[in-house]
Length: 220
Image (cartoon, rainbow, N blue to C red):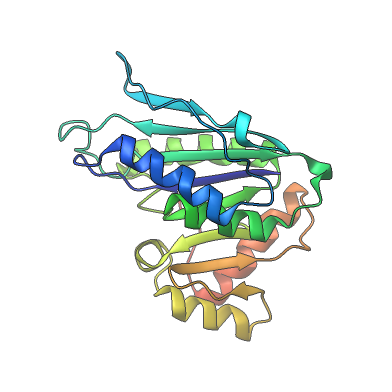
């Protein structure tokens, strides 16, 4: 199980404080699989990104958090530079994927996240979104857009309005009426379809069904 969540950044963020908040958040929201251990502090050195290994605190897998360097110049394109939290939990852990994602969204104060169910499709989608972004000048799968809607995913209200055409509450009502599983989440839309097969075509079909209901076309 690979969970990926992303957080919007601001040039004025205190990265050390954000990291401290993340560790506290994991202690509250991921107690089933997170162990309270000391982690390294974010250190950029000469780099534009600071990664912190979280694996010592993950009882059933591995993971890391990546913070981007804060500066007004570096943030001139606000669609590209998000902090990222990546957690990989053992397939045999028995953990509920929806609960794992909900906990990570809360701990990281994420604006979007998903459980990646098919690695090959995820890689192809990233390449396609980047290629499309070079044409449009937008981040087609970030703050500006949603390239593929996953069965297990979260989008905050701002992203729902911008990329999916409706407030999160409206999208949730539309999908619930159509028989989709959507959990109540005060911050946005949380899809929790646990029974979708992880094969490529099933995920493509899921995205198409959701888009047909909410009336939003695929990018490109």
